[in-house]
Image (cartoon, rainbow, N blue to C red; front, side, top):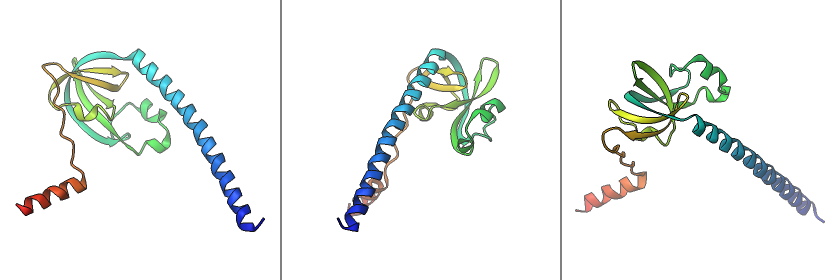
Length: 152
């Protein structure tokens, strides 16, 4: 055997070992995620709230309780999260929000939200359905539309 084939075989073995390790790691994290979702669903409750403001901001700047910031991993503290400031009853609270739900939340309107701790997992309109925001057009779609407008 030449050295080229030996190198190729070693590289293939390393790649296969890496894929197997990623497969088992993925299965393990999938199980963890399913358990966490089940816990969140068990603790979920529906509340009426008036949305004051919503933003994407860093976890440290969001004004969340210090316990939340301390319990998050250090590598996630600098990432931006969806934060909603809402009036729940007489209290004004700062809540985190699911990324899928964040675009649906209307500002300065009353909603029924499914909340698990300080995490909003679902939103329904109190007076009628919520308005779904328009999807942003991709780069090439905008370019294509400009071209069509120039031709006319």
